[in-house]
Image (cartoon, rainbow over all chains, first blue to last red; front, side, top):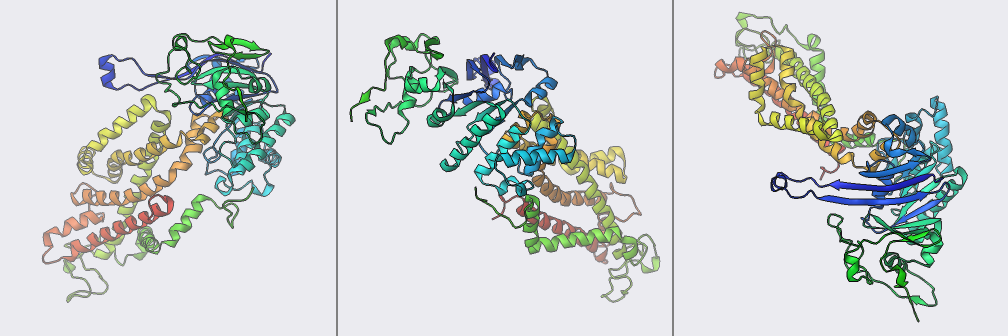
Length: 336
Length: 296
């Protein structure tokens, strides 16, 4: 059984209509940030979630944790329906599902010391009987993520970005959760620090038997650490599968265009660069049919009318495109 | 892995850093000292005042200050129409001004913080209710509102405090609501929710400490306003009742003799001016120190 199962999950935001709109009876504007997502995460695996800014990656991560209440759909964690839990049960569940945030500057309360920030989960869930025990547990996890014992009583502003992210990781892990949403945990960091944090996250996963949903817009990060990858476009998953398979043989034109954007230093046969024109369409008025058809170099008239179904294209590999059968690729090698 | 902001004291908080910024501002410090002196004067009035503030002596009626012919050094600032020592009455009057100022600000800030946090964090109908109430109260002219309330409730120390606090709370409430709206969207608030913290915990432990600086600054600025309002009410005869000395009523008492005995109104008026000015300058220094966005 999968540790996490997401079925038909949607998060829609209703626009606040003015009195004029109400009088004229104009339809309510709805932003479909996350639309009808199905996915599973197995215990001990890392599912990478990739897509460009504004495609709904973070919203999906937060909807799974009910930080943003989902509009529709179901999230099952270890057999329990998370979306149906009452507040007391949800609180208990929160100990098992945690999140690491993107911005290490905004995610730590500037008025609390490291010991208070990291000790908070222990306090909230009654995991330490005495102050001494709390302190001991905090010190242990802080040491594990690479903070020095003398730094426990400092405030977040006294740390660098990489160290702050370590504090955020310690806070997420101190209650020994099983599942972590990593919401672009390294995108705000310098490249040299990124590698350290990624290595730390992988070590911790192995030691503590964690499962990650790793959100990123950086395909090379996902390629390095994920077991499986889901590609998101405008609130929907367009392709999903084992990471080697998807990266080596991307079937959806959007995945192919993402792949072509990865810079390569040394490659004998240089790949064609696929340049997507235009911006991500507004989720307020998503395109009809296949949502990608407005920017897809392979789009036909049918793509604007028919919504593609998710099809199996390989072992554990799915994609949603009308022209899958034609086996087209944007990535034909260009001879150097 | 390098420290970006290495500070000499490991546990130095933002609060302490701000406080030392404030201490560096000499003018603000001097004004803060004046405010402290007024407070000391109020607290120790019975030991400091040379005479009983309510002791009348008709032989000393409208006696001028000591440096004018006919004055006496034991009655430094002269006497009023009932022969009461003006200096002693100013010293006792400081008690009323400062006590009412503090009490009103305390009540208003407490209520305002709770209302602002609830409106800003809970949103929905709570926000609509509180924000509309704030808008309505802001629509009334302050002094007229207070005069109306005093006329309804009758004079008295507690009634003045209530009459002023009824409207004063909207100021901190609006500040707190605005700051809360910004703070609630920050990731550390979301992190607290993800950890399973309750609404109360988030409002009081995560958000409140981060919105407190502007509230403290606003409270000190408003304290000066409240002191003026109390003096206005007393001037109009709606404040603390005679014979209790209050600066506003002392100014009012002297009105009738302003030409022949200017000192009766002038000295309590100067006391109001000095205290309010000192509070204003000190609070501006506080604002500069605690909210670097304002400093230039």
